[in-house]
Image (tube, rainbow, N blue to C red; front, side):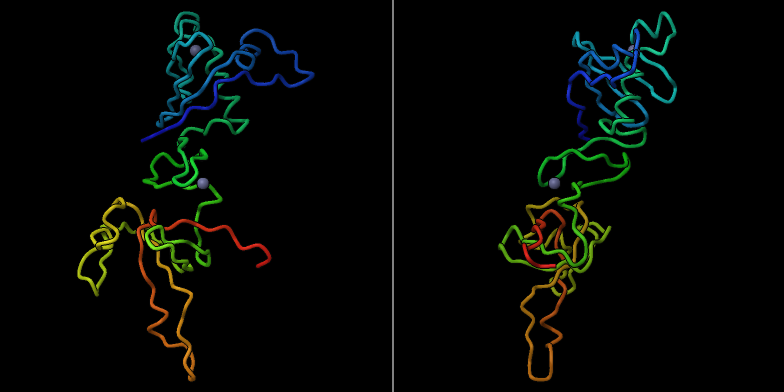
Length: 213
Ligand SMILES: [Zn+2]
Ligand SMILES: [Zn+2]
């Protein structure tokens, strides 16, 4: 699993706080925190050393913890970053959005692909098909994978379908309709409202049109 470290930078010391020793250094020294999953974190210190921290066990591989048994600045730093929303809590990891690379915190057992809030799609959203440029309206966001959903008319899975071959077969599928429904004198022609199924990564969310509500 790809996971991303927090930016290596000092953190501001809250005004009025008279932090001493390890509590102060946990903030003022530039450190980055990489969530590894399973409650483990890797902290890179100002001196480029990396230490492994088991947060729930309260353990760190640094000499300060190993030899003195204290709650070292690395353990404190992770706790601060979690409180500040810079680093995810145990059980979550940091990953880039598939479409814009903004980092998001996700459950470490989620299979992905991952999207930020802007690029997450919901029924009713407008998306663009990356292959054709067509605009569609989403009607269903499934948890089923493209290699597990069959297209009856084509006798193959969504993943195997010709124009989908360049997309990962293990992504979920999304059902969408084309907006150009055929309306006859007696109403909408049902076949023209067919739901088409796409691998999630083939579709890209479009921002809501200005002026529409
Ligand atoms: Zn430490
Ligand atoms: Zn995004």
